[in-house]
Image (cartoon, rainbow, N blue to C red; front, side, top):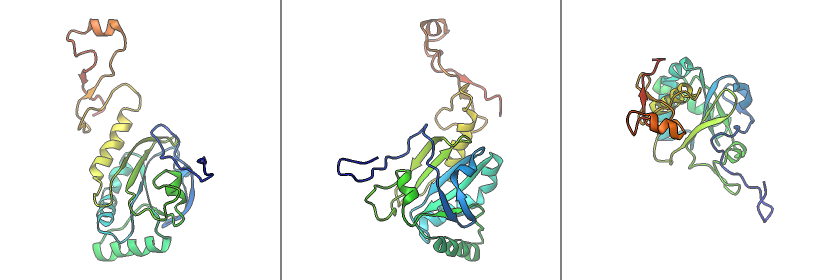
Length: 216
């Protein structure tokens, strides 16, 4: 897409759209995003290697990797740093912190991936402010996303909660309320007719009806 001056425009990816496919070098060889079809995927970008907040996030992702695997969800990291920077960083995490990063980190030195996802503008020369996470379903559709500023780290527990909630509500038979955790009560989808509203015993029951999670 071009603007009136003929410059390329990159709109942020929106929920419900297909995640832009790409091929890139990673710490575990060449990676194609579409190779993750059939599994859930958290594709997350960080501002830069060898930075304090990003280091704390990657330590947390590495230590909770098995919990994502138990959900059938892969992890894929990304930043604009080079592959050599990624390799040196994960070596430092391994040697100094005793943490092995068990998932790939893709390089994006030309900002091609960042621009395709709309993380940065077409004119941007760096992505130091990007801390984005995309929750991609097995069909390659973006189902949720969150963005954080450079100075604030993400909660890996919240990312796990989002994946679990997306999976639990995928069939459309229930909704996850505020603060929902696995095993908590869910909400029934509301009725959309006058009869649904009038048939409820209580005025709020037709649009707010907690139900037991049968899968807990």
